[in-house]
Length: 410
Image (cartoon, rainbow, N blue to C red):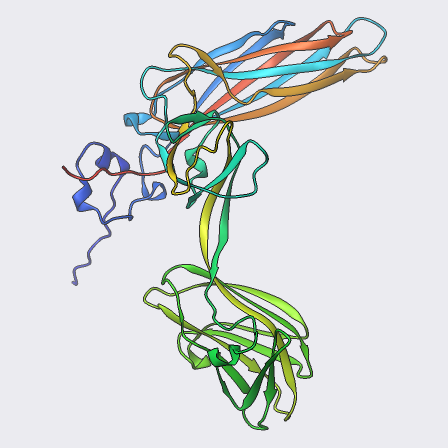
């Protein structure tokens, strides 16, 4: 009987307890989704029959357990509040209810793990600086503040973009005078004028084809190919992205008729560092032509953006600076810090005595490995209301590994 080697599995616990060391694992091969064991944890708390007062007070206090094995994980808290506003008068009642999720600043690490190198960008409002970090690091920044260039700063507009376009890599793709030199044409004629490329058919047996100069790309990386066609007498235009000057080696093909702008995202195969743009006039009628307005190619880069408080000056220098999540800012240990206040409005009509509400609210605290003391406070304002009673308060606590960091051996 033939011997069959069984696939080997490594659990997260083996790495945590030291059974598997950093020198035994290839770089960048371990991700959170490949773990079993202490990857994800769920906890639950519940309280009922409480009232929201006109002064801010605590509805419920609870502890968020530290992650198993003290692994730093992304920490989420979700509140579900079910209750009602009530009145006894004949008129209407209206006002606001405020909910304040709070965490007590713990002993230990109050500045979270680093998110990445932040670089300055443009487009922010006055007294704010837009910055970006390469890659998707949105799960490394939670509610609170950020620490950058030795400053603790507030931030807003945190978001991830998977397809930021870097510089155009195509030479001769704008079809200005002299751009003919960047294209090799067969079975036809390329004429450049008025900012357009006119590809004419000269053969009744072979399609007119124009091939770009070699374009250097980074292998294993997604690229975006764009082409704008603005008409012509020929019906169809064929566009190929190829690893050689032959369409038989194309890794992407697009066939379209009429005037249009196409945008094609292509994963460049590992090992391929040169590609060619091939544009083909599909007509076999001599003299028919297609008109190409522009041909471009961009490497795509994942980026995470945020706007950082820039008063009195921009915190991120031209060369970039390391940015970390600072959930508690400079607040002293033991102090309660509010995250993501929720404001809810209510109205009870003259023909009603109560108004029922079901509210959900989430807070992402970023990454840490600490036990956390938490509470939910609330208050109400308004006129004509007797009170607000919370019938059910359900709290979900969720911890999950968002990045695996295996430190190097000494």
